[in-house]
Length: 212
Image (cartoon, rainbow, N blue to C red; front, top):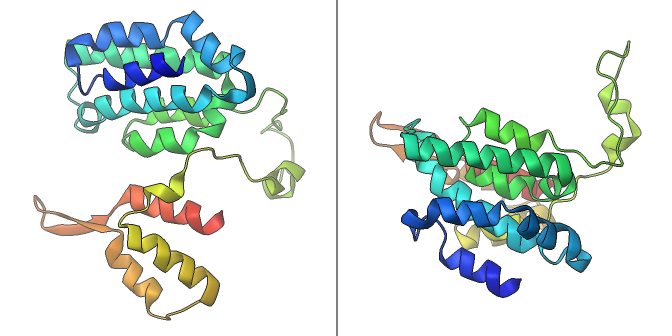
């Protein structure tokens, strides 16, 4: 299975767009999904399948970000949503464990796709009734358990020296100017409007790094 996943990663849509439909058909096949996410022991296939989905999301991201969905791209997008629905129904724990890595490469304006991933919860968990009178979410015992995140988010922090600076600040709480300087790190210049805006992905990674 490792050889199959490695080959599919090499033939990902970004590298072989003409093979994208056949690629998605293979990746979404029930036998392939079942073998990687269910039959393979100790969840060894989870990381490989997560990488294939990230390959798919990265290919769709530029089209989704600009809302430019031609008919071929629209069909690929609908196929992707169907795969996520299957995973949400049969393997919600997989979406829970890799939710950060998936949402990190999905544009923020893709609310439907992101909600499919973020609505997953473990099958052994019972969600509280939102219509319960005087419900206080912060008082629920489950709120004290941090979600499992299998994505190596620390490796995503760029530039690499920033991670060292963050580690140093968390240990020593210094230098005092670090937080004010961090503001410029998480900003990107948008030439079309000549403004500096916050880098959404950089902010989310740093926040997750601080709390883990």
